[in-house]
Image (cartoon, rainbow, N blue to C red; front, top):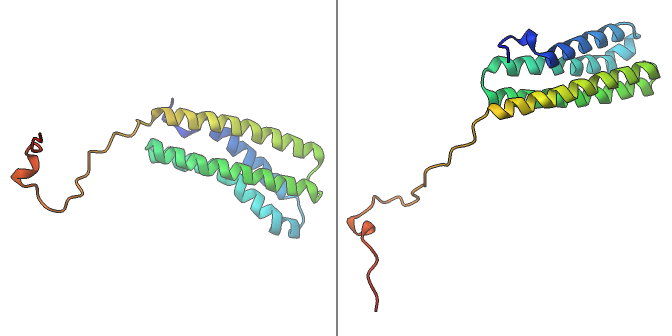
Length: 148
């Protein structure tokens, strides 16, 4: 895998999608832009932004967590797109196209998350914890007495 964000396909798809949403929302009337439009643009922008932020962390667990945030934003975006269709701000064909694009991004994001997960080392077992506040005495290490 490359160490350049721009080489990450899921990131590029997310950025392209959010730019497309931006230009669609720009054409809406003021009320639609101010209510649903801002929410839609923010959630769509957040998909790629969280991928980028996680990528820049250089720690697999943090990267994965930001990808989970990205996935949440993707699902949120689907919700806003559904509202836009219901409120006749986008056509049925635009709705289908956007949902299809989000499905592709979703699949690629899940694959990326799985790839990141394969890089995380399994947790090491913790050493036993001594809950006894008193220091050990010589008798603590003695074998138990024999009984007959």
